[in-house]
Length: 403
Image 1 (cartoon, rainbow, N blue to C red):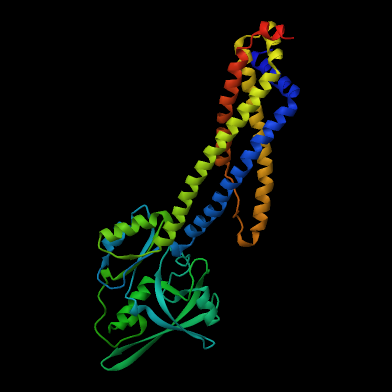
Image 2: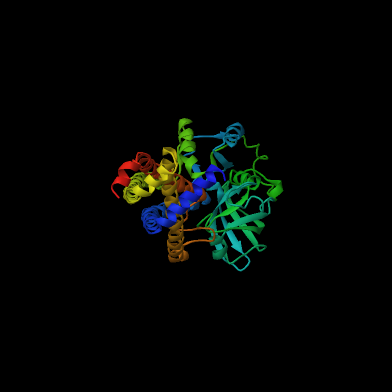
């Protein structure tokens, strides 16, 4: 029989002999761990879910420039910003007033909206479905107001004033994409950038044969710079850095940094509070185990003296309490995990109405669970070490003389 196997048999025999005390110590460890695990699970579940929702919401990552028109953004600028690792998507935009149009449904419903450009990779998810000039994407709210759905036809109507005359323009389009409300609220519409630039040129008085407009100035020259853009940071944690970089280039951005920072600060503060709670809990577990081991050692001094008399050296006697306390800690972890699972299940059922599939109000990731287990075992070692040191110093002659 190997020494390690023999050691395990001794530890198991010790646990069987002292099972009531060992169970009580394991329950004491579990009583400390369960509230701690629930608090950690709530931080990950509630705050983590909030941050994940914000990250999935394109509006939280959206960055727009000030509409004063003081800046111009050319293709070189756009290419440079697309190459940044913290930028997920950027697309130029026309003047705000040039994008105002009326959408008219076949049933007569009419809605004034601001057209936005879109392209492949748009976080709103419309770029892959709106690829031609006669296609349009709508938000759910816009579709509801117009009473239209995918495949329905609309008329885009706008007008311009030239030489004292009002010149209208009507363009037929097909709805090929609907943006869900969690990605974009309000009434909005999306077309490809060339179509939006053509509408801007129409308002500027140019002739546009491709739109059937032959009157006006000579054909519009290619647009080399744009007054606005629509940019999305890769993550809500990148919004502040991207906004600061824009300000460094004298571009005043419009963002939701305040909301994002408030949430991230709450997460950081909760982490700090939980770190303090973990430290206090670790001290509590250590004191509980040390007290339990000292009491157990006092009861087993004669048994240890007998073991020493029959040939077990000081290292064996020192290792026995270490194995005992580690087993107690593992037992406390097991019991705590079971109680935590019950509590987490009850909490998640309580908040089920507020959660979407895949979300949880109380969730403890594997890596945090393993960290809790590691800290518990590390905290248990000093208790076993102190008891082991005392056990190794047991004097058989003194113990037997007291019999």
